[in-house]
Image (cartoon, rainbow, N blue to C red; front, side, top):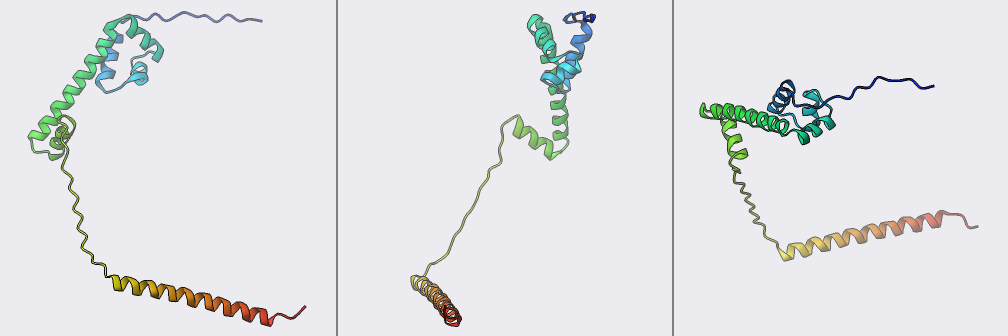
Length: 148
């Protein structure tokens, strides 16, 4: 048994309200799917609308540009009023400024060949003592075992 579901296709038109919602969402920094949903459309619908009507893409670009302009003005005002973080953000992000990073490595170490040889000899003697101790322990262990 089949049931009929009423289906009415949504018409994609760049109405004034829809363009205003696209503009407002883009001005706030939304992109892609989030922008489409905030403007009241499915992401596929928004992509189609941009393909069929260039004014939709213009609304997005204009909103994004005006949002960036407002934030830029705020940053510049803050920098002019002495906000060092705002000034640094402008220098780094707008002008590509990077602070110089200098790493100074100063290694002043002298190596004594005789001291290195003495240290190596001491290590060899430590290893020989450990091996002798292990042999002594294992021979004691064998001597204590009853003959079978």
